[in-house]
Figure 1 (tube, rainbow, N blue to C red):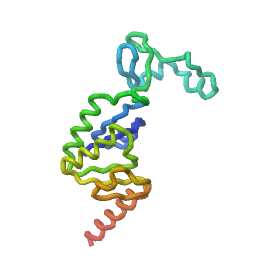
Figure 2: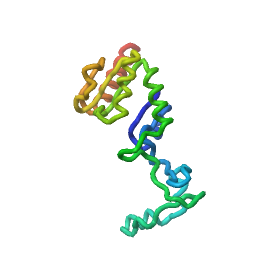
Figure 3: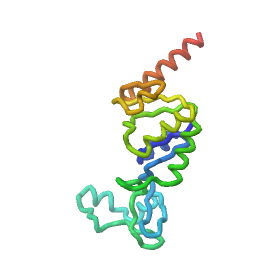
Figure 4: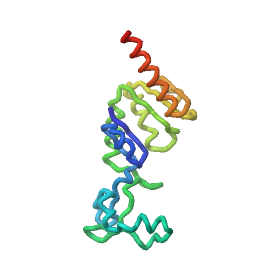
Length: 172
């Protein structure tokens, strides 16, 4: 199973989701604007151990940028900002996995943000079954095999309860 996410918070990794493709990058890493070096964000904390306390007291200002250890360039979160292209490798992996999917689940996406909204369509074109779970209708609902409108937490919890209930019933 592969998880393709637009989230940058790293929660899929913390939940041990396995193979995760982060289309919009990750806040767990930072990238140098000059030499493109990438660092785990946690490795930079010792460079300014007082930052968290200073920030809480309102003393942090934008002149306190983190600098690259290798070249001194400015570091920025390793995420896709508005108007930027997706990372090539993440996009290529997402296209490959979507093209090869047998079953494709969309959770909590309006399916209006391009190019990510193309991925479920690609899965459908290659024969995948499509399940969409979202609060509101999406432009792809008419093509999906199943559509459930509701909160992800409630819907997935109900599905889990149904599966667990059936499993316990089968044991009797």
